[in-house]
Length: 263
Picture 1: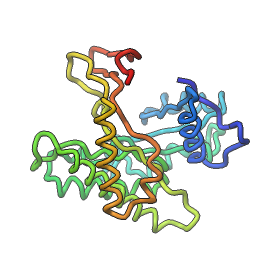
Picture 2: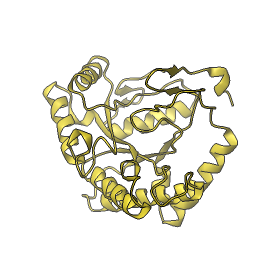
Picture 3: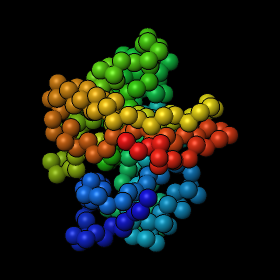
């Protein structure tokens, strides 16, 4: 993957979300280009990521998962506002301007409350979505794929899509309470990735997502978003997560195989 700096062919981009939109545009135009998100709260990892951004002129993109940072503290002990403040303070102390920091939520959904009923888990997840937006998170991966205590083992895709739209609605309603010039959140949907923290099961590498399955999923998500009046938010879905045939566990790593991932 090739990353590019905050300086683009069209001049300096003034906002991190502009960077992400420009990245998507260029990728869809055929450039082999991308970026990475740092999903860590470890000081050494964050300092290394900040140093990299300073060295190559790129943005600093840091994300937190729902079990890592949430309204109850998560395993880091920080809520979204506290986590955002910590990242921004660390970046600024190193000389990286806040305007070059993207804060994101990864797997934002009911994952860490899945032992409770769906109603309770989704209420907590929606509150987390709202707090993340208020804290200044600009990119949010909405993930409602996991079954809760009163759910069947595997959720029907329409249910996943409807819950994803419910999470998005909570985020959008929270954004509506911010000043009029506040940046609207960008969204990622889909969940064909290891669970938060990595997949621990051993075995064969998972099969890449089929194109027909992806099309069906996108159709379900789109219908769910539009049913809740989220047409504007749907236009801000900049990516969908798929399974390219990459996996990892405690003792193994399945590397990317281009031939297997060819559609």
